[in-house]
Image (cartoon, rainbow, N blue to C red; front, side):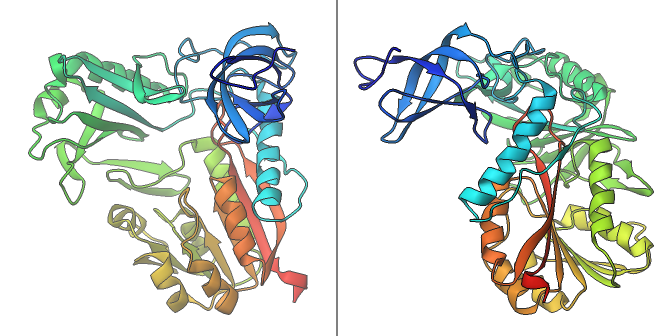
Length: 431
């Protein structure tokens, strides 16, 4: 087998892929004992790999050629897959994607949290493509005057891969709205706010597609762009030096999740996968068990709290984002109160409760939250996580009082390495 002991003199290695890492890269071994991570490889592949990053204990690679393809490999459906860094698992059979995502969670809990669990089952998505109701594109204006817009490149996040209508993950109205915007914004994207770099988020709602532009200068007049793109209902802008997100053209939109309907402002958080997200909500509510008082922490628009309140619970929702709080307070069922604050500041005052639901961002819990739960928390905590690593870290922080009683994953993000996990914690030893 060809080796690579000195990346400066020999930078090609023959690698047999034995697994997948949490980010979706294939895992193999170099002759010198280091692990090498190579995107777009599958377990069972034998590949000629160019080493592009060399560290003391590990290396990063790029596929030069595939010597022997794994029987588990499939042809990725997206023609940009070899360039775009958005998806990571299109070359893996969907059934195997689910198995590996469960392993990612179990591995993180063992390696980071010190908790040994069997790999949890992963509930599949009803749709393997066309499921995303929210997509964020990056637009850059180059010095040459040319505009590039799309996703970050594979292995080179400073570069942008042009995306027109190729991406297979968005819901169809979002794909159409993106194509319409690209055709309408004009040379140099002159109908968008001025600025070298913009973030463009498209979100699908019951009333149509909403565009949120982040970055650029204040005072953006979006009326001309709105007239040219009737497929977009509302245009929101959060300028670089601004303090909030402002509706600059169009009409506010509303969206429905189950029996709940609320206004969608700016980038207020909602799950990107409607059907699988609805099943996740039902699962979380079912795990609340017996009780009457709940806290829905990091509640967003309050979907967990709304469902519990309709079941007779008294619920305090805690959310820091003003737009999400406004949506959460719209037509709230009796029993649900929304508190606009950070969880680290508000949690202690909202306790006691029979159950606490935690749905933090990818960064996980603030360092002060676990000590509050250990001191004053209830007998049941339900943690909804979009990142196995921070879930594992926070599990370790909770272990003085709590232990995992149940673990279920939901595939809200097919074709990517991301997975949503619901961990149910009970009192350690059942006491």
